[in-house]
Each structure stands twice: as C-alpha cells, then as structure tokens.
Image (cartoon, rainbow, N blue to C red):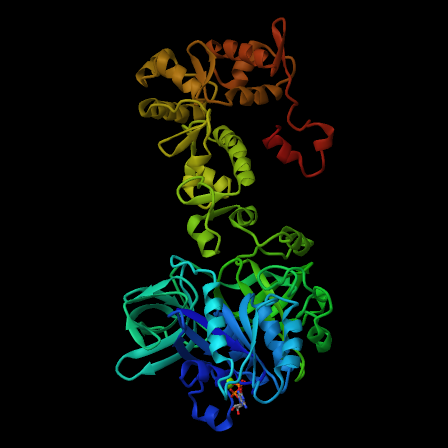
Length: 637
Ligand SMILES: Nc1nc2c(ncn2[C@@H]2O[C@H](COP(=O)(O)OP(=O)(O)OP(=O)(O)O)[C@@H](O)[C@H]2O)c(=O)[nH]1
Ligand SMILES: [Mg+2]
C-alpha cells in the first residue's frame, strides 16, 4: 500500500479529485458537506491500474486549518499538489508548498484541476515555476477536471509511476505512529488511526504512549481486519491499556525513541540542503520579517536566525507543540518543547509562527534534529562552541559519542543512530579519544589509591569507577591494561595481590605498629604471625610492608615519618638520640638510619647525622604565610 497526501489552496478541488479517483467521500463531517469545506483529515483509497493500493490523506486548504494540513502531510511520503486552473497560484498554495518542502517531502505530482473552467496553461506555468525552486522540482504535472473526469486516467497512470518510484520503507524500523484520530467504539474500546510510515505493527504488540504502555488488541488497514501491518500504511488500532490516546501523540516501540523536550536543531533553508531541498535552489521559508520575501522565495537561504521569534510552534507528524527558541549560533537553534516528543536525530521539525498576520506565510522553516539529549550550555561561550560542534552534517553515532562520550547501544538506537563500531565492553560504546584518556588516567588513580591505602591489595573497582566518573563498573575492568591487573574486585598496580593469610598477618602487624611505628617486630613475632622470608618478600613486593633491612620491616611510609621525627631533634644527632626519639631499639635504629641515608633523608657525618627534611615550622619561605603554621606542622611535605 502507498499513502499520498493532498495539498493546495482552499476550494481548489482537492476533495473533489480524491472523490473522483476513489469513489469514496473524504469529507465525512456534516459540517464539511454543508460548508463545502474540508475541516478534518479525510481518508479514501483505491486500486491503481497496476493493482497497487493507494490511500489518500485529504487535507483542508483553509488557512485556519494549517495545523491539520501539517498533520496530514507530516507522515505521508508523497503529495498530490492541487492548483485550480481558474484561480491559479494563491496564498495557501504558497504556504502549503513551503510546508511540504520544509517537511522534506520530495515526491509528488502537480495537478491543475478545474481545467473545465479555465485554460490550465497559465496556472500550470506559475505552479511549475514555484515548485522548481525546491524539493518537488521536476515532478510530473497534469491538467484534470474533477467534475468532467477529463485527464483522470492519465492521473491514475501518473500516480502509479509516482508510487513505483517511492523509496521502500524499512519493515524492521521502530514504530512511531502519529495519531491523527482517537475515539471510542462501543464494545471494543479505544481506537486510534494514523499513517504508519515504516516498521510493522501486529496484534498483541506492546507499544508505548505518553501515558504508559498499551497493547494492540486488533488492527485494520483500509477497513480490513489484519493480523499485522507493515508501513507505509493507513492503520486503525484497537488498543487496550490505561493510557488515553490523543491526537498529536505518538504510539512507539518501547525504548526505541528518545522522549525529550529539549533538542538542538539546524534550520534548513528550504531548497538549499537536506531532505527538503532541491539541488541548490534559492531559499523559501525562513525569511522572518516580511511574508512577501518568503512568498517570493527569492531571498537566498534564509534570514538571520536571531530574528526568529522567541516562541514558535513545532510540528512533527500530527503533533503541534509550542516551543521556546534559543539561537546558539549559525543556523543552530535550541528548542525547549512544551511537552516531550519521541524523537530521533535526523527527524524533521517544522517551525511555524502562529502569531503572524493573516495572509502571511506562517511556516517559517524546516529543521533537522541534531541532538535529542543536548548538553547544558549555561557556561559562558558554551552556546557558540556547541553551534560550532554541530556545524557539520546531521550527526551519526560517532559524532554523538564525541558529545556524550559514553553511551549504551540502546541509547544510541533511541537517539536514532545505531552504533557502527564495536562496543568497548558489554553494550557500552565510547568516543575513542575519551576512551584513550580514561585508559591513561587509570594507572595514576590506582597509584594514588595504593599510596593512600598501603595495606590494601589494590584499588577497589568501585573506587576506580568513582574516581574516573564512570557510569558502570564494567567499564573500569575494560580500561585495565598491563601492568595493571584486576583480581577479586580490585585493581593492583601491576604488583601481585597478597594471599589472604599474608594480608591478614600484615594487617595484624599494622595494628601492632600503630602504637610504636618504628619498633619493628622481632623475628619470633614475625614467625608467630606466619610471616616467613617468602611471605615478607611477597608483602614487600605488594607494597604492603617496607623492608628496611634483612628481617626488619615497617609499614610503608615509616621512613619518611621517621625522618620527620628526626628533623625535630637538635642537629646533628647521634644514633642513640635518634633511637630515643623514634621510640625503638638499637636493633632497628641502626639499619633504619642507614636506610634513611640511602634514601637521602638523612646525611651521615662520622658518628652524627643531620636530617635533610626541613624542621617543622621552618617550611620553605613561600609556604610561610600567616595562618599556615599548623598546616605545615601536620604535613611538611
Ligand atoms: N467545475 C469544476 N468544479 C470543481 C472541480 N473541482 C472542484 N470543483 C468545485 O470546487 C469547489 C471546491 O471543491 P473541493 O473539492 O471541496 O475543494 P477543496 O480543495 O477540497 O477545498 P478545501 O478542502 O476546503 O480546501 C466545489 O464546489 C467543487 O464542486 C472541477 O474540476 N471543475
Ligand atoms: Mg477538501
């Protein structure tokens, strides 16, 4: 099946043409028939000569119903653009064309109707010229009469050629059905209708509405009950669920869309880029101050973005949502939507100024969505940086990762950009540059942790996750590169983790040493604790103990602490003075002082030594600001 929307000025014969082609009545309301005016979207269908089925979405042409017109054209892949031979190009012809181009519709037909009332040639010529500037340039054009039937067979042939040339929609695509009607049917409950542009809906499917999940009880397409429908199709769904559907909402595949009220978009000068554009044609649309400029369509690719009104209405599918507009720089604009919408990067939002005078073109521009989860731009200069970042093409997964750094595959898909590369771990994808920075930062974090927690066998993965600001522990493990290694939930700095009994013995030792930190345990005590030569070597290798000399171990950092104590002695000092100050025995004091000599913390001069640490309270002059004395005392280094 195919779906084509009508477009064109009020009373130019759109509904008459649909009626003539399908034998069905698109104007269903009593009021519509009484006033001879389309108010609501009309639906009618037929089989084309090829056998292909074609459904029309017939839109109103009256300027008051522009929002309804946009809802009709919003999900249709092609338009039948109608101009009356006897009236020619009119204001809503212009407005509808601007809208169709801004929405990115590139397929259609130009039909000059009421050809029984006037020579169609002049209207045809003007209309062709207008269409030539944008995405509908060069479409097939025909003259017909909905009243006499003149030209209708040719039109059916042209419609067949049109639908044959439409791109095939993806049946696997996630569902987003913009609801154009929602009503209750006695006995079966809630029914919604809409144009399904792609994807597939089957009875029993669970879909998501803003109000919650719903289940598809049954579905129909063109009044025919079916077990499943694949887009493009007109569908009517009978729903079960608590959420009450409304026109303008979308029914979506759960999790496949980002529901957002904040988007960064780029205004597309109609006719100059992207989906709505003809090849390099002049711009129509965004030419804010004067409607005629826009209507003439000769103003180049759009007016300065800073002249956009601060509040506009954004249209997509059947949704019309008020939004506030914040220009970020260039043609990039941030929109805050009054209600969240399910969006993908690359979606087209049409901006309209409902406050404009009658007769003015109110459709301002089409926009391409560039980010559905844009970062804050409150920092000074951030808005301009953001605009520069978004200056290129519509971002793909790689560009989104540059902004967001780390995203899960599901998040990327919900943004409309399925990941192209392999995940860094699990379902996580990373910006390669950011990932290398993290790989480089982890060893430093592990070193720092080891220094602060010398008795622990490594940095807990959770602490590393926190230190690197990562959202998931699994990412930490994926960042580990030799000589780092992970075991038992800890990352060690390339040094082997201690076996549990040794770690326990070292911990006991740590408690004992806390009272007299320089009184290294005797050989007997070490043996009692099960710390033989091999265990001691392992503990020293793991950084859990400091080896001062054979059989003499202290806690890591004890040497610097000792030097600090010695710095308080009158200089120079003897071994005996040092032993007393350190509260230890000669057995320990002599090798400890030799160790300090080797580390350059003390300097030997015969029987005396000097400490090479600055004495407390005599920190280097640049550290000696008033009020810092106590600070210097507690941490001279
Ligand atoms: N003579 C003649 N009259 C036509 C033709 N097509 C439409 N009309 C008449 O033009 C008037 C408007 O036709 P509609 O089909 O309602 O026009 P429309 O474009 O659907 O109007 P809206 O939906 O309100 O925008 C009606 O009185 C039709 O009978 C035609 O080909 N020839
Ligand atoms: Mg009509």
